[in-house]
Image 1 (tube, helix red, strand yellow):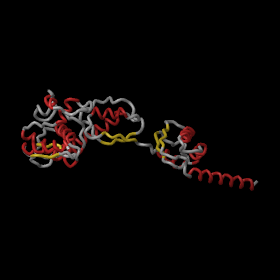
Image 2: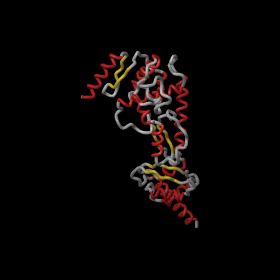
Image 3: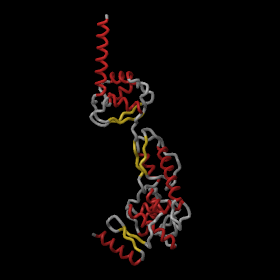
Image 4: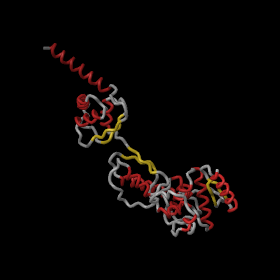
Length: 317
C-alpha cells in the first residue's frame, strides 16, 4: 500500500513537473497577434480563443495551469497583443495582470476640427459618434491612446481638456506688450502660424511678422486665412489659390480685413501657441517661400519684392 502511494506521488510529481515545463516552453505563435477576451469569459473560453489564434496548442493544459496558479478567476477582459513564441505561462500572467493592448491615434498639428473628427470616424476600433460640440482650435494635436471599444467622444474630451490646459498655461506666460486682447486671440494667431510654416525654427520669426504687422495696423495678408474662407475647414482646397480668391467677402479674408480673423483656422500645436505669445524680436514685416522648404524674411517692401522674384526664379527651375 505504501509503495502504491509512493508510486502515485511520483506520478503526480512527474506529471506536474512536465506540465510546468510545457507551460514555460516557447509557444507555437509565429507572428504578432491580437486576441479579444470578452467580459465574463471562462478559462475554457479564453483557452479556446488563444488556441484558435495560434497562441497556445494545448488548451487543456492552459485550463489546468490557470487553476493550479489560482488565476482562472482573475483573467481580465480586453484586447491583448501576443508576441511570437510567447510561452503559455507568460500569456496567462499577461491576462491575469490585465496588460491590455493600447492603441494610438495621432491628431496632427494644423488639422481643422472637421478633419480631426473625420480621422476619428475612420478609426474602426473606436465606437459611437462624435456628439460633442467642438469649435475650431479647441483640440490639441497629439497622439492619444485608447483601448478597443472606447468612444470617439472620449478622444475628443481628452484633446479638448489638453488644449484648455495648454491654452491657459501658455497665456499666463506671455510676453508683455503683445497686440492680443486675450487667450482666444492667441489661439487665432497660433493657428495662422501653424498653417504658414512647417519649419520649427521659423515659428518665432513668422510670429514676429504678424505681431509687427498688428502693432502697425497693417493687414496680415496671409493665404491660409483665405483658404479657410473658401473651405471653412471642411476639406482641402485641392487647387492653387487664385488672385481672384483674395477678394472673397469673408471675415477670414485678411487681405481685405484688418486684425485677426474671428476664430482659429485650424488646431495649432503647442509650439505654434508658444510662438504666438513669445515671438522672436525682429523688424520683419514680410516673408515669402524660399523654394527649399523655408521662407525668406524682409523688413521692407523693396526687400520683400526681391525675395519674391528669387522665389519665382526658383519655382521656374
